[in-house]
Length: 114
Image (cartoon, rainbow, N blue to C red; front, side, top):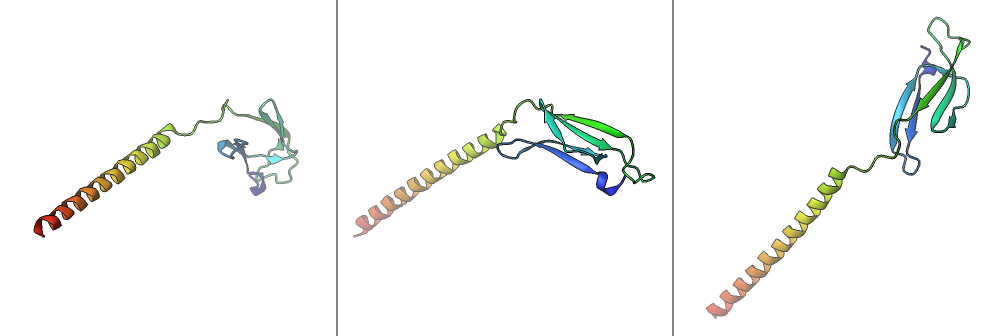
């Protein structure tokens, strides 16, 4: 295979660039890819190490995503962040309570020793 004939096509979510799929094409591109009804059509020709002149028989490659809608964000990651926030909140509350109790106890010891 000619080094220039290894092309990788990527399907991305248009709004944020998240990859949906990719496909490595072992053909030389002969025309600009066209999209129709969610299918990418590519005019190409196959090139081998024996015939590197790009004049081999042509092919039309059709790539269609099996993804019908953008993937949802991982719910587990969201749950982990929410749980981390809840734990951090309660640790902060506990720290404040311990600090207040320590201050009160220290203040009472000062008054009882004076």
